[in-house]
Amino acid sequence: MTSNSDQSPLKVLQLTDPHLMADPAATLLGVNTRDSLEAVVESVKARGFGPDVILATGDLAQDGSDVAYRALAKSLAAFDCPSLWLPGNHDHHASLAHVSAEIGADQKHSIQGGWQLIGLDSAVPGKVHGELAALELEFLEARLRDQPDLPTLVTLHHHPVTIGCDWMADIGLRNCEAFWQIIDRWPQVKIVLWGHVHQHLDQVRKGVRLLATPSTCIQFEKGAHEFSVEALAPGFRWLELYPNGDVATGVVRAEHFSVELDLNSTGY
Image (cartoon, rainbow, N blue to C red; front, side):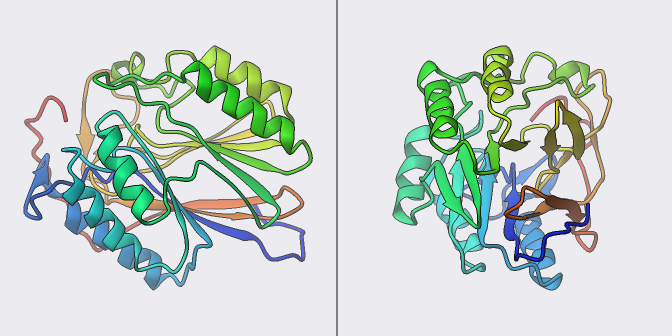
């Protein structure tokens, strides 16, 4: 969408599901996840997109190691801006919290460029599905109540809507009704953004833009009944958020990165 605003937008970069590991040579379904992340970072830089903030929306590490999280921090240092890290089902909460605090990426709330950004922790330790604890829901409502006039982006790891993949139906956000009850009360929410699904989605629900983004490593096949991956390039999402609430966004893939998948895998 093209904004009619003549004010400069807040530029947001979403990177999601890098699944990094301590071993730089480690692969996920045949893809070296450090190499694929670097290819995505190179694509962002090549397009001249200079983000004001980066949203790293979960499954940042496959093995939950401090080494993997520090590798992510090193990659993101290519951009001169703050980042906000959220946990996914593969992350280790304590390790992620420790390393993200070292670089100031542990903040779940930000107001900048005329927008409010709210990050939510939907990860349930030891489980693949997501759930927002009572404290997370209270945090969401309080932040929305505090800033009723600021256009707002809400981000989390797990998908809060059905995406058309049967095998992912039970591993999304379990208490999505409670989440939407809050969102529906506050019309300043313009965007709900997530990771987890390793694919592109762009829909609208009651005036709220629903956005999911390809992983920086492997991609899940759209509309699949069972676990299935496809040889699409890794990617990122860019967003331009205007103070009047207008939104411009798109997904870009690192097409120069060669994807050679292990198609015999039945999971990740």
